[in-house]
Structure formats: C-alpha cells, structure tokens
Image (cartoon, rainbow, N blue to C red; front, side, top):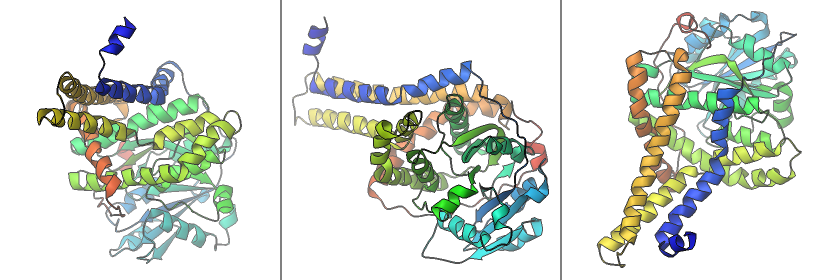
Length: 435
C-alpha cells in the first residue's frame, strides 16, 4: 500500500511532504512545551538578600511616557536605596532628559551620535558612563527597560528572587498596556504572552535557557564587565545577546511573577517597520551565530546542549519554509496554467498544497491565540468582547509576517523610532496581579 501511494506521488507531492517533515522534526518540541506548561508548575524561589541594581533606560524623544516608567520604579515594593535609575537620552530633540530628571532618575546622560545609531550603542554608552561613578562597583546587576514600559509594583521584589538564586541573566513576564487599542496591538500582546507562558515558562520548568526579548531583563554586572560593556549591536541586540550567552554556556532564567507592561504599535506602518527590523535582525543573528549554535548542540557541556538547539530553532528563518512552500506551489500552478509544463495532477497538488499550507498556518495561530488568551485571561487588561474578538484577527496579524520576512531578505533595514504616547496609571495596572 505504501509503495502504491509512493508510485502516485508527483515531485510536487514529494517536495511538500519533505517541507512538512522538516518543519515537524524541527519544531515538534514546542508542542511538548505546551504540555509541560499545562501539567507542571514552575519552580518557586525565595530571596535571602536584597541586592542593589542599576536600571538602564535608552530613550529617544520619549517625553510622553518616560515619567510613567520612572514613577513605577520609584513606587516599587523594594528598597529605593538599592535601585539606581540611569536614563540615556539618545539623540533627543524634545525634553525627555528634563522630564526624566524631574521624575526621579538618579542620573541622565545625554548622547548625540548620528553614526552609531540604535539601542545597543546607547546602552553601551550608558554603561560606560555609570562606570565613572564612585558607586559603580556596588551595582550587582543591570536592568534594561524601554521608556514606554511600566512595572508591576512587585517587579523588583520578584526579579530579586531570581538573581539571588544565582541567575546571570533573566527575562520577565511581558504584558501589554494597550491590548485593546486595535487588532495590531492585540496581535503583539498575544504573541508576547504566548512567548512568556509557552516558551519561557516551559524552559524554566525544564531547566534550560530562555531568551531575553527586547525589554524587561537583567544581566549580572560581572557579565557586562567581562564583555567590556554592551557589545551586541545587530538589529536585534536582545536575540544576539541570548545566542551569544547560550553558546558560552550561560543560562538565561525567567521570572513568571515579575510583570511589566509594554506599549505596542497601533498603526500598520509602525508595525511593519518594527517587524521588518526584527526579521532582518533575526537573519543577521542566524548568519553570525547559527554555525556556533549548531556546533554547541554537540560540544557544549551536557545539560546545555538542548539550549543551543532551541536557540537555533528560534533564530532559524522558519517563516521562509512557508514562503518557499507557497512560492514553489504557486510557480508550479502558474506554469501549468500557461502550458509551460504538463498540468496532469501537479496543478491539483500545487493548489491544494498552497491552501493546506495557509490554512494550517492560520489554524495553528488561532489555536495558540485561544490557548494563550484563556490561560492568561486575568492578566489581559481589556474587555471580554475584545479578548474574544481579537482571537480571530491574531492569525491575520501573524500572516502579515510572510511579506515582511520576504522583503527583509532583499531590503536593507535601519533603526526607525516609533512614537510612544500611551500614559497609564501603574497603580491601576498593578491591581489585577499575577494569576
């Protein structure tokens, strides 16, 4: 029977089944992650010591939101004398620096450099400026936040537990402060919640390395000192740091009880520009680190090899498999329609495979959206109608990654600022708490 089935397969069928097999082998472990999260609780930690931290905030024309972040840090349920807030006002043309000082920043560094543009360069500048302070050696770890963030009142208390437990770096629970703005902000929010719950929490439970994601993380002071500052300057400096750390055998932790609220874009052009930069950045990281990660699967110390595989799959251009599949089948269908090749059963196979690929992509995104929304329901600050409604737009949001990933292959990317304008009351956001 199997031989008979093979005899009726066209080369189009063979190609499509091969793509499906490769994709399944590479990413089946992430379905196991879902099982782990739903059946096991992550380990709990307690801190014996309150440690001292420096906060680095890179801000470019963030006058409308920087005060909210600093306020949320200053009202933390954590000793204020153990938190230093350092704002890098990066190429600002507004009064971000003044507002940061008035809001309670420990120090504000104003940087003007149109040659080295981007968050990584600003963080490196800020770190070196902090080293000039008399109390620089007292900071045991450095937190990094985006200027549009606000923190839950217990954020530092919870992250301190992870650092006290020996973590050299840790990410946190990334929530969104404007889930309900529209389908674009909700698409981001669901994705980040899914990343926190079904990737980071699973990795924490299985004692493998997580990855930092843009904002809301700390790095131990000695790690930055050994690196000579912030040395990661690709377009996605967070993923570059994660890949570099995992290759070196460092484990990035995760704190599911430390929540921050992040502002998401609400216009498609801002979303396109941001995700285009991310896609290009992922390609850069893959180009620079894929070989070392692959090698690490076999050569890293036992217990740290799977993290290399996991990170390799994270930066691998998986979306390209979808693009290649759709492009291949679309080309076959067009060639058959215009009589360049004999149609036969190939055109049927090609068209059905295109539909199958798109349908399954949308279906899996919908399932992930439903699963994430209902397990994280109480942490989503929006109406019931919007929580349900945006489940149906989430697959469409994810589908827009396909043209973005394709354009990122051929077009040069540069860092473009995104305006942040949504001011929120951190005390109100913190009332829900973690569920």
